[in-house]
Image: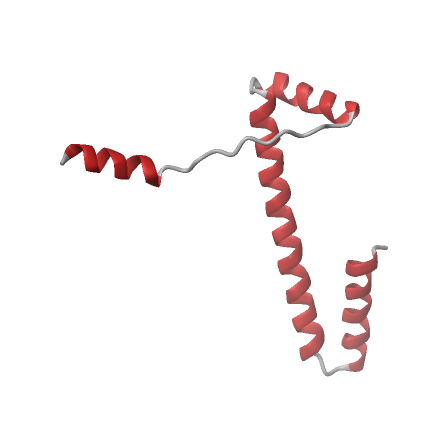
Length: 94
């Protein structure tokens, strides 16, 4: 019976996926510098940066959809224009 519990515990662990990436020299140097400054491995720094980037992208998408919803719900022409301008900057940049 204990063997079954151990086998189950192993199957529920998160598995890591090995990836190979090629970085431009400038980015590689920045990653190495960050790793040295924070006393981390290059790999750990890359994982943290990727996690932060994914989170930032999700927050940006959420902000966009909230702005789009405010735009759809607006009835005041001045507010519609302002929100439309904000949406345009969001989509096309400044």
